[in-house]
Image (cartoon, rainbow, N blue to C red; front, side, top):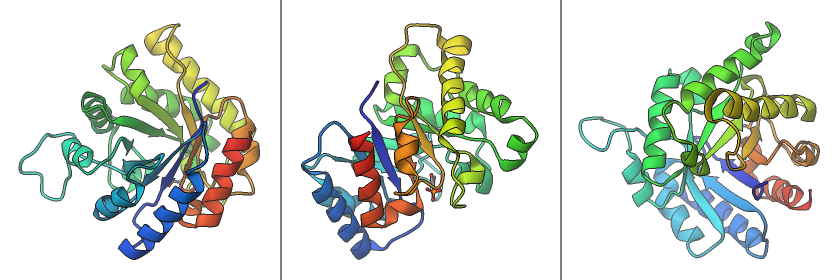
Length: 253
Ligand code: PEP
């Protein structure tokens, strides 16, 4: 089992002054903690300032997205080389908001995962079913498709640079989290899919995060589940008290 990983996805929130205060508070809280990895994913415009705040600390930096091409005429896009240059060790890839609001396909997401690995950036590949897909019994089909297509062409040693975040779309930002047993069931299925359908036995332990309305109130039960290696936290990562409470819970389970 890997060290628990807690990632704060700030989405399109915060201006520089607010981000500096929040990142500084989290850095100070995490300073004396060991055995846990905490990562912040600010928007692109905040990366430089947040990097300065986190410099020399044990809190990592992630981007929320990037484009797989190296450089060129891609107006509005940011490359993996650029996000690495901005200090990111991690990249969230294929978040459901990218898939559903911006039309990202499994094929595009796969190119981003490959590109991240190539650039030595830790990829956090997000997968998850919609409410409708769950209600119509398609959860496992969808998860298998997103996992297999997302990892297409990647080698088994690349898995050391990849985590999966199971984020049911119906749970993101809704206040309705998956139960620990729902998360357990899907996380187990993801591990089985990755061994049975792609790489076979003997792969190194894979980190699978749960995301979707994680709060200080529900995190202990979710994180105590043996299949859950950490959390991808949206809304609750914007508040110092709630994010630190989640970090604390991850440390204690
Ligand atoms: C997310 O942004 O990945 C997320 C899970 O958001 P929230 O925690 O707000 O549901």
